[in-house]
Amino acid sequence: MSDTKWIHDMLEKVSGSNIFLSLCPREPDAQFLMELGAAVWFNKPIITLAPAGRPVPDGLRARSERVIELADASPGSYAAAAKSIRDALKKQP
Image 1 (cartoon, one colour):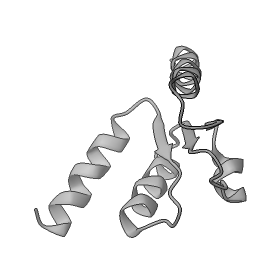
Image 2 (image 1 turned 30 degrees about the vertical axis):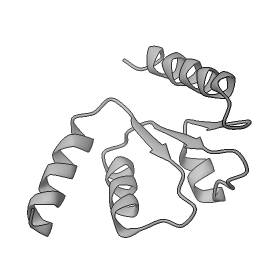
Image 3 (image 1 turned 180 degrees about the horizontal axis):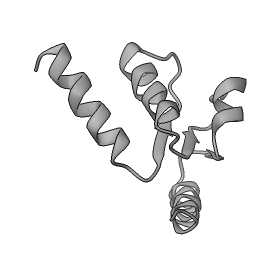
Image 4 (image 1 turned 90 degrees about the vertical axis):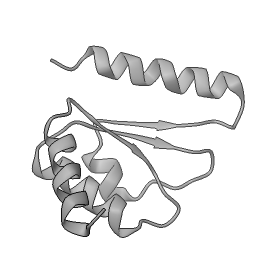
């Protein structure tokens, strides 16, 4: 897929979505930053999911409607994160 096609597809997906669910990376790459920028551009609510021990940058935390920090890699922690995501989705129009 060409770079231009990927960008067009990504913009279409982000603009048509109700929310933007972000998995906080250790180090951001160009794709993550472009997708996040598109979410901001299209004024999408951002929900950030951070694995246990992963710091969430202040700017991402400030822009996120909700930050879900996993306590650990246990099934219970994943279930709590899934419930938090479902709750956030219920609040969206």
